[in-house]
Image (cartoon, rainbow, N blue to C red; front, side):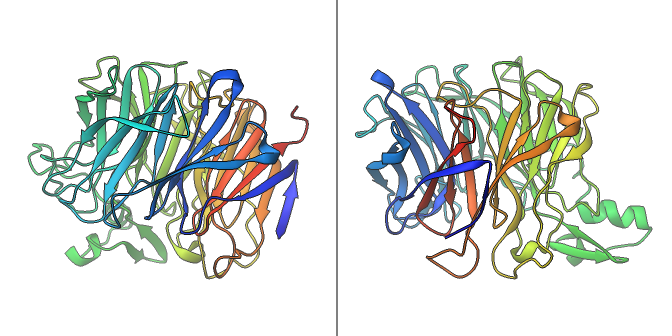
Amino acid sequence: MTQEIRGLRLLGTLSLGEGMAGGEGLAMHVGPAGRRTIFVASEHAPYDFVVVDVTDPRRAEVVYRHELAGPHVRSNNLAVHEDVLAVTRQAKNKGDAPAGVEFFDISNPEAPAPIGFFDASGEGSVGTHFVWLGGDGYAYLASQSAGYAARDPRDQFVLHILDVSTPSRPREVGRWWMPGLQESDEAPMPLRPHQRLAAARGVSLSPEQVGARRVDIQGVSSWDFGFRVHNIAVLPEMPERAYVAYTSGGGFILDISERSRPRVLGSLQYSSPLPGAAHTFVPLGASGFALLSDETLEDGAADFPQNVWVVDARNETRPLIVGSLDLPWPDVVPAQGRFGAHNLHEYPVGQGAWRSFDLAAGAFFGLGLGVYDVSSPLKAREIARFVPGVDPHGPGQGQLNDVFVDDRGLVYTIDRRSDLCYLLELDGAS
């Protein structure tokens, strides 16, 4: 079944359960006596998340499955810190409930116990897409909630900061979005990607073109995937900084020394012909460099080139793209499925994660899994690759959706179109 594997050993392929599809959430819990469990979010109902005992990765075993309230909601993302699990609730339709973040006590991973809920439901809201637990007593969300009315419906999620020092009583303490997006903002709406390209080319656009997902202007394609917060990274190496991926808005570095008043230090905004769909923006510790991963959103890489960019953020006010990670583009990209950048290992704290910033890993849909030596960010190089073969549960290539690397050098990756979880080991890991 394996099409390609280099620099890694495949320890096992685990079925998470019929109907499961790997979402954008992989997190580890380390319990008494070194017991390790992986929590896996699901793309859709019936499952919310699945718990896998990986203490011995060669004998990985599903020990718990949690089901959703119904088909009108999905989890998509989750995070773990010590004995607390946070799981997003994203509704199918605006105004549906539950929508927000649910918190669980996972001191016994085989029996997660609900302990709290942050309600982000309300008119115009689909709830929460992403959650980050930084180990600093706060949770950072990409979310909608009551009271946020975007001028453009594509501009869904904004940054919410919650005080979760008492997880049973989470409360919002701060919120931030690009000025001009909300109906009540005094600032004007920022220029959309199509408008920036049109201005550079000296052409005018119709309102229909401004509102389109794709516009071709003088032979150059422009994409607008919305100005919406996607991922947030707050690392203990830089506790007063939040790195925020804002889809077509690019990447932002925020000063969060006052959680109630996040402040922009610098931003990196895309310009065509880069399609721009900032998905994961994570600093490489305190090195001054970061990785910014796009998300390819179109089948057959129609929105090429979505990539993983190396960003020089030593001057926080002017972050710059200075390189990229190599992706194994085929000569001909298949028409079915996504092919290009997506999720990165984010060096989370408090969950048995790999936290040495000399190594990076990413899940790239049909391009598989890549591991990179980034000890010299300007000379990043691939050291391992895993590309599954044809998906046994559907047409075309497997679609790897997320990746997590633990502090033993073990790599976990999941497929978004099937219930498969792959467990791998880096060559040289003990």
